[in-house]
Length: 399
Image 1 (cartoon, rainbow, N blue to C red):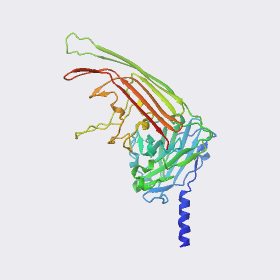
Image 2: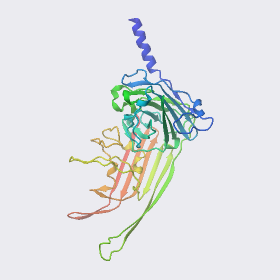
Image 3: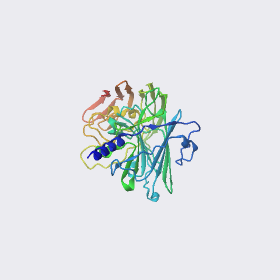
Image 4: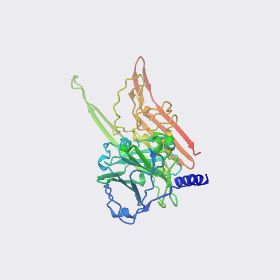
């Protein structure tokens, strides 16, 4: 009995002893992002290979070898994945669309909690074809907002022994606070699709369900970044738009000419607190919604894709949690739905002015949003003109 007890305690200790991940500062040229891992600079990185299964057997050793290396310079974080596979011809890779569900493919993933508080973070994933999937995590990883698109690079290559991938993530795409020694939360995963096998650096319990791999409350620690300089964004995006229309079937009609102009401004008050302003917001370049057929009496749910509303969108997610805000699944008690701004009774209303403040200040997450739309005239039984203003404020404190 004593021997059994000692062995059981040893297993518990070894399972909990997950070493911290260390990033290495580049001392030469940055790697070329092509998926090959042949650049000599990768030899400077510390090899990370202590993975364990989440599925199908929690805590078991992976059936295939996985190695990860992390480098960084003043501008970007570089991550290399080497995924050996004893049956390389059976690797599943058939998605190239941005933000496709790469869980259906052989893929690798990276989670970064830049505030190291377990409340949220950033998600990056790619498959053996080099497809890009990214998003923002909030509510301890319960919510994944895939409408957020980071400007980053990744490539992958296949060979007879498996496949490899490289990622380059600019620091100015991430929000974090300046520290003398930056410490982030991190988790790294790999999916071997034909075996229905998922391995992680720190696998979450199977009881967490399908989205358990996104949990930011259970992460390893990333060290070695040193004193990272946090950027404060400043962007001005102006636009002009002209149109001309004329009814040639009508007699003696003049062309209806229209010129619109406006701008968006993003300014970082602090590295973790951002304000956005918009005048006559242009949504013409927004990604189109996926076509859906509705055979029910209920309205469809379309995710928010307008850039102005994506910064800090997770702060305004309160009500019933939903795991994928980029999908079409609607939470039944979502109390704030930004897609309704600019629409009234099925009519489009131009957004005249918008202002937003999002981010963190100490122990608080702050979200303030105000939008003003143009006046609209809707004719039914009575002609009515409406001038609409929408506002929302949320202040949330760390537990």
